[in-house]
Image (cartoon, rainbow, N blue to C red):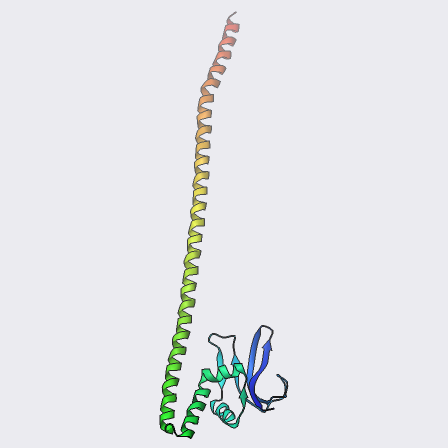
Length: 193
């Protein structure tokens, strides 16, 4: 079997971390390898890829077969494009300087795309945090308004109850005085007899 360029899994459950290795196709996934040429961390946004560009290119030229995921990584990093350009130089389609120039322009465009995407992600996260903060403020203000309404209603009820109690005490007082005066007169009348 040919030499393969593939990923070797490390990391914990649900948080994978991979080593990019060159291995014999018959070797197990996490078994023996010939050379480690980089790392890949898919849990980050954007994914962190560290790759020895020259080693990956030389192994491709020697005939190493990348797996599907490795092919995507090599394409993302530009190794496959550089390999394609070097094939064109070998066939005489263009010069090596022209190939290097094309690769540098592609690399600059790729870096610009990556930075704009990561800035966009950061801005999106900031906007989402701001929206959550505003929503929480609205909920908090609504709760405070409800609490204020309850407190004013309780105060009004207490004030009304105290007014009623005061009104009842003022109404009861004259009745009590009249009742007290009446027996007093009766006692006077009894005294006179």
